[in-house]
Amino acid sequence: MTFIKLEGLTKRFGGLTAVDEVDFEIEQGKITAIIGPNGAGKSTFFNLISGFHQPTSGSITFEGKDITKTPPHIVARLGIARTFQTTHLFDTSSVIDNIIVGYRLRTKSKLFDAILRTKREKREEKEAFERAIEVLDFVGLANLADSPVSTISQESKKRVAIALALATGPKVIFLDEPAAGINPGETEGLAELMKKIVDSGITVCTIEHKMQMIMGLADNIMVLNHGAKIAQGTPEEIQNNPTVIEAYLGGESSAEVI
Ligand SMILES: Nc1ncnc2c1ncn2[C@@H]1O[C@H](COP(=O)(O)OP(=O)(O)OP(=O)(O)O)[C@@H](O)[C@H]1O
Image 1 (cartoon, protein in one colour):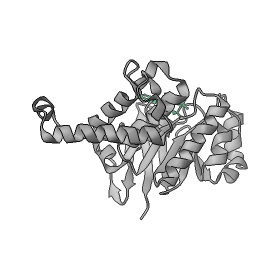
Image 2 (tube, helix red, strand yellow):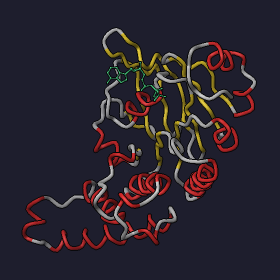
Image 3 (cartoon, protein in one colour):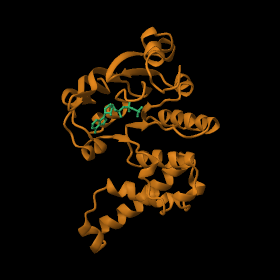
Image 4 (cartoon, helix red, strand yellow):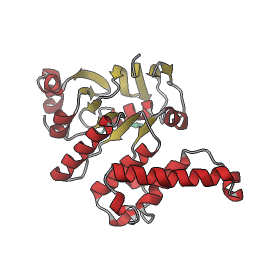
């Protein structure tokens, strides 16, 4: 069974086609990268899969199930997680509280349980704490658990964003530019973390502008340009593809050159 299958996936915003008839398959247990010049439709593509946008046409299948029009919270429950920008973190709260809140938003207790402190609520609170400790340890931030987010580095914030997504226990994680705005040494560390995630059995799909990182990391790459898929293949195939080189060098894009 195909893990994630996209057929004819299209999203129009008024007259603009942000994602244009994309057919693609994401393989389980691999690292897939989505690349393309600025405005190519990469974030929109992620938003379609995670249910934040509804496609104009086309379909999305996850483990054989049609999830094309499924709302984001149901998509998350099925095991598809995504990271948000680090600006979505609560700056004045501690690292661990950020993870707990993120986790609790996805667990089941209702306000009623919280007010009455039901057994279920207490059990879930304990679970949330234990889960947060576990994922912080996994991403290498156990020593910063009690630090306010405002005091940690940009690279640590990226790890917190990843930990938040991992806390939900996903089968696949979508990372939106995990290495943007951090230095080369830190980029290396995040690449290691992505390998660790995939080795733990979670499929990784990432958008990234840092070509050197992607070429050494991804199993498969899909290239978008003006919303359309212009190439897919291994890093080597992509690097030598004339259409891809033209898309990066021919236009006015500010993406890094391959
Ligand atoms: N909510 C929206 N409403 C209208 N147009 C949008 C919306 N979201 C994205 N677009 C447009 O769709 C196109 C694709 O945008 P998208 O953000 O998906 O590209 P991207 O490849 O992620 O770009 P970048 O690398 O710069 O982040 C752009 O022209 C953008 O302006």
